[in-house]
Amino acid sequence: MNKLPVPASADGVFKAWALARAADRMGGLSPRSLASYQSLWTGWNDYLLSEKSLTWQGARSTDVRAHLEALNPRAQARGLVHVSTVTQRRYYRVLKKIYDFAVAEEWLESSPVDTMASVSPTEQMDSLVFHPIDWDALLKAVAPAPDPAVDPAQADLPWLAVRDQAILRLMMQAALTVAELSGLDFGDVQHAGLGSSHGIAELWPAQTGGEEEPLAAPVVTLELSGARAAQGRRVELPPEAGAAVLAWLGVRATLGLPRAADTPLFTSRKKAGRLTPRALFHLANRHISAVLAPRYPHTVLAHAGPMTLRNSCIVRWLDAGMLDADILARAGLRESQALLRLRKHVHAGAAPALQPVG
Image 1 (cartoon, helix red, strand yellow):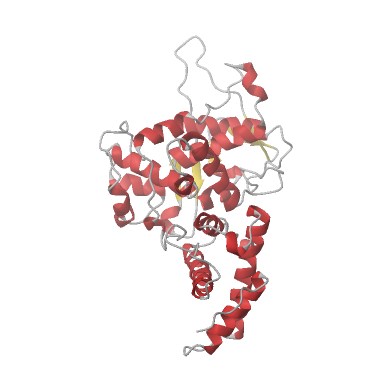
Image 2 (cartoon, one colour):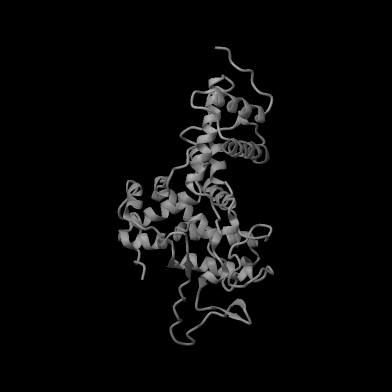
């Protein structure tokens, strides 16, 4: 059977695949599906050119995975801040069909849309987890929250560094999802030293016990919400994570950002609005790669991001012997079945005992 010549453009690849699909016994695509798939293919190639400086022929499985992880939602007006795994799988299937066609026509030796590129169909199935030794290194590499009262030099830390420290702590010690981090508002933070005056939120001076025993540091809590009932919860942060959030609030107050209750807690590099899922993935991946690059190949670390940190945090809770009900409450999960795929990573006793959610 004669093979088709390699198209001169990515658009030509799509047209050749669509024509072959139309000639197939299963029939062609509807006009609506054709337009949707072409838009998907165009977006993929735009991503390759802008983010990777690659053509469709030079893509690797890690590029496909990164694209799927970084997809932006179309329904931000309705409050969505990340695409569903269902959407990611649909993108995966369409790209796989086109690349499989290209391989069949001998335009490529192999398809980059393979199992390494696949996004799990549910959150529970995405179960990459770091070993306790690696986890300890990742936690230690997150700088402590700056405290100018102890070290005045830390007051000059770039604001992005303080923001990123807080975000990483919430990923690694509170198991927050990308959607939850992106959706956090100023008013979602609760703390005894946080209040408002004339509608403007502000941090009040820390309380002291005078000459008596100093008062215990107040707990920082977050009020979280989500599409599922289980995602609506009140999370008490560990001391390190709470201190990092307070440090960020202190720095944030110097940036001239709005401080109304419904304004984003974490803002983008340009202070223009909420952090996107892509920005949060790259933030987490940069930290992971900086710490663990000597231990793992790039193909493994390229996939590691917020979900890997969330999974690893949950496994550390399992390591510590926390009850399933408490883990589900902390993580915003509904059923214990969500923990099944993570149990194989458990190292009992590898983490210190933790207090249940009160």
